[in-house]
Image (tube, rainbow, N blue to C red; front, side, top):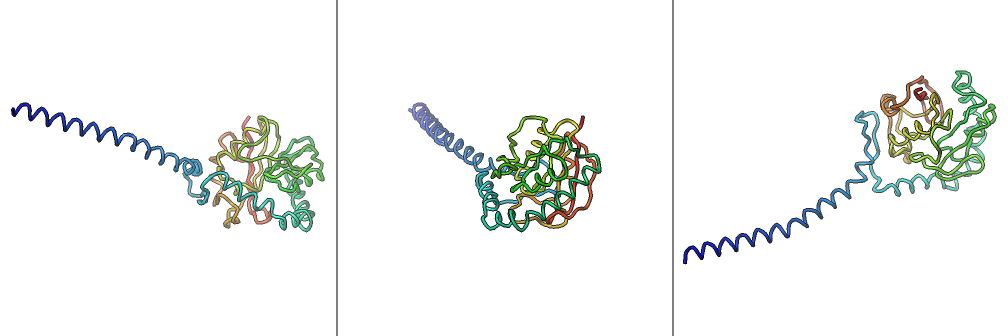
Length: 248
């Protein structure tokens, strides 16, 4: 009788353990899936660049929320009115000076094919035309024909290696700096030039997605390019020009 009792107890214990395992396995997989789903966006919004001089701003739960915030600025009626009236000629004059200096430095020519990233109303494109560079186009989330086409700088709507020069003063708006730079290097021709205007001395505006405090993170992000020069500029709140050339 004792042997039968022990055997029965073992069977009961085994059934109990089997029941516990059967119940906990689905719970375990559910928790793993939930944690991976909730952290998926976080993992993609943090830069692989460990340099503390480039910091991604928190607060974007989804990529759609990031795009929506950017569109809130771009589609703001008051700002668009300012950009196309009071600021129009002033910005063209400043950009014309910048591009003329690039020409003098043999980084830009009349035959260059140029992309202006984050151009909004296309003042950069108009400035290029005025200094003799006719083959240029702007790209922004909201098109402004004929100067600006629709495009996301994290995923440019262009083929590989078609631009001689790419200019941008919206690096601080990049939620994924690695993707921003990799798309530039993808669409630049071999030997092509990228010109960035950035702010290093102060925090950018509320629409910015990152804060940059030195040129070092950019040097790491441009994996297929070499630094040509950096210099101080005065470009609508941006203080530093950084120029890279794609390796041959």
